[in-house]
Image 1 (spheres, rainbow, N blue to C red):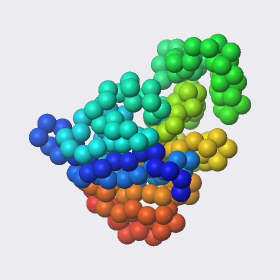
Image 2: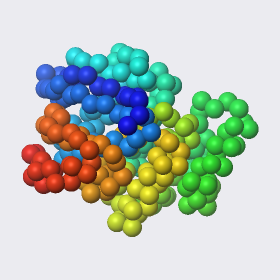
Image 3: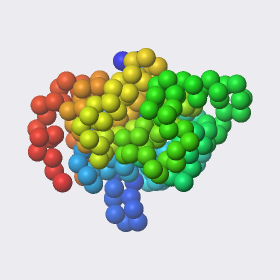
Image 4: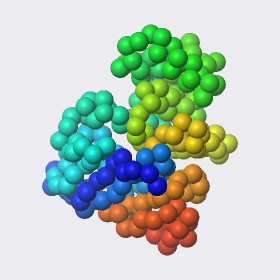
Length: 237
């Protein structure tokens, strides 16, 4: 499955005195798509925030590329190669598509390299090329999701965490988004942690998955085995 790029060991988090994540352990392997499935309120977003550093760990470890990043600030984790793409979130609605992309590439100081990366983005997301002067806030839901993903991948992260990329999208747009997810992995070799409620789509593109309920991992295994898992058919809210 490739080397482990992200390892979470016995992670606990809380909001005040309320426990949120309890004894979470999981691994993500390089150049694979790993999915995290669960209902609303299960702890998926809290886990993303813990990985990126906007939620503190009470106990446990987060290991990225062999380094303990549990106590590092968010900007250092991003600098080390973690990016999050969230459905339509993380874009600047009053700025143009091109400005959003350039701001996403804030750490690329070489203009020639930036131009090359932008051309790669336009090739991968042709719908954005026709919207460069349009303000992000006027895009459709699907286009905003595309922009969010494009902003995250322009830096070629070592780990791309995708938070509910299908949220609120029409089925035909969902198909397009998951086609992009699959292509990023297969053609670009990008390692992706896919956090989703669309179970069928997530399992169709991933190799391995985890099911989270009430802040705990209750099941894990190869994606083809999770299709018939009772925990997905009858989730505990």
